[in-house]
Amino acid sequence: MNSTENESSHLVKRSPFHGIKSILSNSTISSILLFLVSFAVFIPSLSSDFVWDDISFIKKRIEVLKSSRIRIKPFISPGRSRADSKSKRQEKRELKRSLKGQNKQGIDSSRERRNRIDISEPGSHDRINKKTKKYFRPVHSQSLVLDAKLWGDSAAGFHLTNIILHSLSTILLYFLFLLVLKEFGVSPRYPIAFLSSMLFALYPLHVESVSFISARGDMLAAVFFFLTFIFYILSYRRFLYIVPAAISFYLSFLSKEVALTFPIVIVGFDLIGRKIKTRLNLFKYLILGLAVISYLYLRSKNRMDFIQMLGNREYLSTDTPARIWEVVTVFLNSYLFYLKKLLFPFDLNPFIGTIPGGDLLYTAVSILVIAALIVIAVLSVRKKENVTGFCLLFVFATLGPAVMIAIFPLAITRFAERFLYIPSAGYCLLLGYLIIIAGKKLGRLRLSYVCGALLCLSFLIVTLRGQAVWNNELSLWEYAVSKSPREIVPKMNYASSLIAAGRTDEAVVQYTESLGPETYGNNKTKALAAQKLGGLYLNKGDFDYAERSFRAAVSLNPEYEEKYNFNMGLISLKKNDPRSAEKYLITYSGVFIL
Image (cartoon, rainbow, N blue to C red; front, side, top):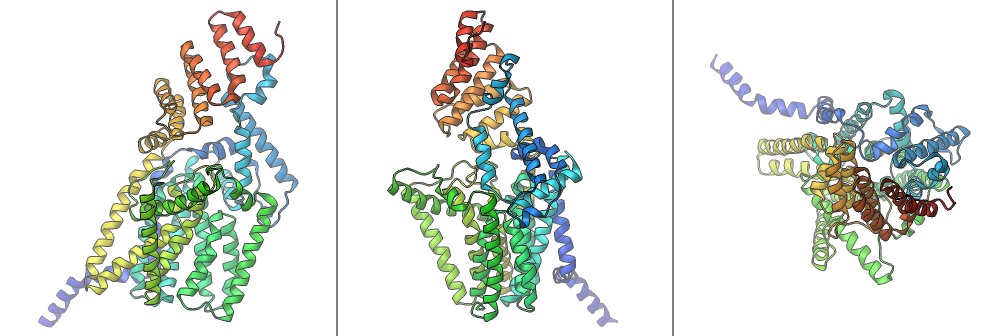
């Protein structure tokens, strides 16, 4: 009787801890739990609207997307079919209509044809064309077509797809972690894989990737790369798994260009695991290499190649020594910036215009930190503590594209938290590994579980709060201005959202601040702000300030001269000065008006 009571008492005392252990050691239960948590934490995003690029790429193109067909040809053929060309032409027509609607300023019908050509902001069509040439992401574009057919113009449906992609990434990452830890002979691998995946599911810097529909390219690339890595590791047991690995590898390229760094991760994994010298691996590399060559060939026939993009030195000095120094400093400082972001992911910022650094001291610190991490990675591999070395390799390799974007104008946004979606996988594995292993070595495994749970809770709080920022244009740009008060783009976008909300006076303040010397922005962007400000003053009847703003636009960018003449003609008419109006409008139109 007593022995039975003692045994039951002993079981009661141990049941909470053993209950957790049994859950963590069951991969099916763990994966279901990870899916539910990663899905539930982003449910608030379902109530968010289209924001930022979502408006131009999805909302204004929704009819084009709905009328497009789900197609296989863009994935395998460099040419375009008639239907694809027709879709492109229709898309351009829709874009021109939207630009006309946004910029029309009450011009009379006698000049309607001229206004169709000139009323858009100078260079806007060029910017659009340049952007479309840079990217070749048929997986991403086809996912938007599928969403449009399923959900119509409902933003909630598009957000739902993003949440599902994130949840799928989390589950795939869990099974990938299990395989990686098994290959490296790490124990206990189930708790480490679960904690690392949970950290990834709740990681605050993923808010932008999940809540911003247009940023789903990173998640799509992650899904296919995690699949690639899973099949690649399974190919050690059965060679034929390399076939689905190559297919997933190819699809990751067609999701986002970050996949170009994945071969480094795979070869590095083999090097660290001491498997690179096997003959079978040469065949695997050959098959994966064919996927890379196929992608590069397909891309070269459809979009601007990488050499052309790297040749665009918009952000660099013309002087060669200065340019080399800029490349080096931006390279080092960007790595340090992103590493700091990964380490402390609590300060979210939807628009990062500039990063700290540029001076010799900051660059020296960057060199010391990066060198120290490289030394740690090398020493850990030499001591056969492979997880740390692999995680650091993963982070450094997958951060490469983000650093290249900072150096060269490969994207309009040079810095962004969404670029850290894939690198964060390596960081979360390292973090989960260190927490569990530290608890094991100290004989405090329960304490390590508590520490892991507290860290997950802190991530959860920041992630839930961060989603509110992406609720609509107004909330996004209001927060962006508060985080980057000296950047001109958030101010201008905030001003536009204020106008849409009927808060014109506040919009005037934002445009005025955009023109201040303390605000970062080139002359073209400031000229656009001056032009917008002049339009607001014109609508308010404040003609003197309107004239000053239009003059400022021309002084910053001479391309606004025609608009200046037209707007001055309107101002003169409203001032009952027909002679001046005629002079300005004749100059604007180039013809004599009776």
